[in-house]
Length: 224
Image 1 (spheres, helix red, strand yellow):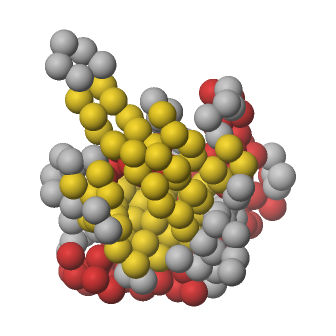
Image 2 (cartoon, rainbow, N blue to C red; image 1 turned 90 degrees about the horizontal axis):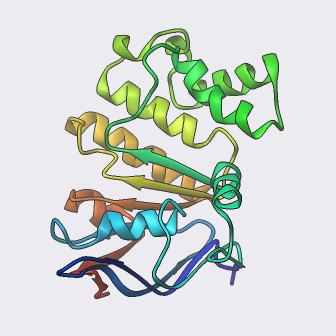
């Protein structure tokens, strides 16, 4: 059995205040290479909060998140940022493409930040990633010139820029029509079959049913 790319053990996140709120309550789960996991649950159940903990965008109040076997709770903010850049790709509902840059330039940004590939080689990798997602003819277009489905595919290419073993997505089809949603699903499915670990938060139950595995969260607790 392959070693888990991602493992959360008794992870808890609370909001302090006059009335404390538990966002994630003792969550334990793991994901191996090639897993395609859909996280589902009611609105406000803690799905996105769990995803942000798994992606090192937030820190747990208790428990531990392991990335490729390495504990992350003791890392500094800069160490966590470096780990995210190198090993985790993120896709969000709202794309978050920078409007003043072309599709290829948006994809090349994390490549340049990591610094393994620079200059023309970074742009060549960005162009190749866009082509692999059917966007070869959109590389020089700006986000305002793209449809929602095209924008999300650019965002997926950007998430794959540094060839991370783990891809996390938060409602990636939430702003898309059925055809574009189906295409995004097919991309994630193919990435998982190629050995990447894909974890997606979704309200789309058809999407979730077709994923390889489901994790349901209710009131901050994983129920199955």
